[in-house]
View 1 (tube, each protein chain N blue to C red):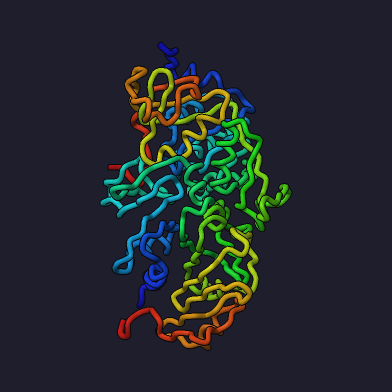
View 2 (cartoon, rainbow over the protein chains, first blue to last red; view 1 turned 30 degrees about the horizontal axis):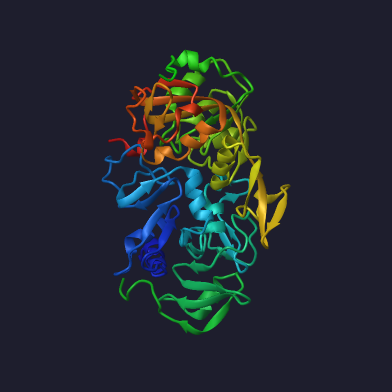
Amino acid sequence: MPDIKNIIAARAARELKDGQVINLGIGIPTLVANHMPPGVDVVIHSENGAVGVGPAPEPLCGDPDRGNAGGAPITLIAGGSYFDSATSFGMIRGGHVDMTFLGTLQVDGEGNIASYEIPGKLVAGMGGAMDLLAGAKTVNVVTEHCSKDGASKLVKKCTFPLTGAGEADVIITERAVFRRYPGKGFVLEEVARGYTLDDIAACTDMDYVVSDTVQLEAFGPEPGE
Amino acid sequence: MPKNKVVSLDEAMSHIESGMTVAIGGFLSQGDPLTLIHGLKDTDVEDLTIISCTGGFRDRGIVELVNAGKVRRLIASHIGTTPDVVKAYHAGELEVELVPQGTLAEQMRAGGAGLGGFLTPTGLGTVVAEGKQQLQVNGKTYLLEKALRADVALVRAHDGDTWGNLRYRGTAGNYNPLCAACADYTIAEVEYLYCPGEIAPESVHTPGLYVKAVVRADLYYRGSSLSAC
């Protein structure tokens, strides 16, 4: 059984460029840090007031005053720093964070993202996601293609409350990669091993066009995995 | 010599009255002023409006005040880590206003800095923008968000001196300094207490002029249960 979450994270990590400052959301986005491509050195910003986040500490050896946006203990690399939340979100809205990776409940063809609330079911709060979508230069949505009940998370039109309107730039799932271009909407650029163009069409409710240069078998589990 | 503001927990709590708005520092239990939260829980005040980034973590933090029936309204960014807060909200026992995290931080900063509000792109096209004024500046659209002030702030610092100069540690310094500045009466609990001058002036994060009372922190309650050593 392929490890879907790490397949998505590994493909997402290929979006990174050397020298960038990036922010990773909770869940699959956190795994992106484990798949840094060779020669790519990035600095990780955590919206709750840290930049230069390093590897997680050994279990039960965390520092109670040093945590990430999910409350889990962190370490800092040499050169990292801590700051208050007004400064941290000033960095985000001020365009000083190059890329953010976040999961979602729904994303649609206009780049709308709904990631924080299922009305009547899940009420948690948007946390820092709205600021990250509004402020980060590039927004990468990293998500399983379908929800547990099999419905496409890439929807015709978001029905849950929006976290950001028109903010998604790239969508990376275990099956495909879509990139949004002005005036064109989302373009299907890559299909993962084990899927065909028809498979993607069948599990994607979102409007998209297929790139003339779409890459098949672009990523995903190696044969035999 | 600046005034010595060190007081007992009871004396500090006597400044909090029913119906007040209380800003509380900390983030998912990193830097939560648990000594003061527990002190407030033991008073008979109620009908409080709490401003805090989160509801706490699991059963610790703001959630303890909610469970004690002291909170009428919570202004926060994320309550998903405290199931009891979500439950109280669904049961209609607690009003919750959810605010984007960066907007909440800036609302406190603006409140503490004497500003009426600020313009932000965060929340445009979402429910956050409903009923709020939008303005165009240099061709870009922004949302007008109003500043937040509190009657009392409860904060925790790693180091503090008797005048109330505070120095935070790690990410525990994310919301505490903002809370400390946005209230009329700020109470700080400190883990290590110093004489004025012992904290290097250039490493003071919250100057003592923001702080009205200093309380010794109960060192038993510290940080996240996820990171216990």
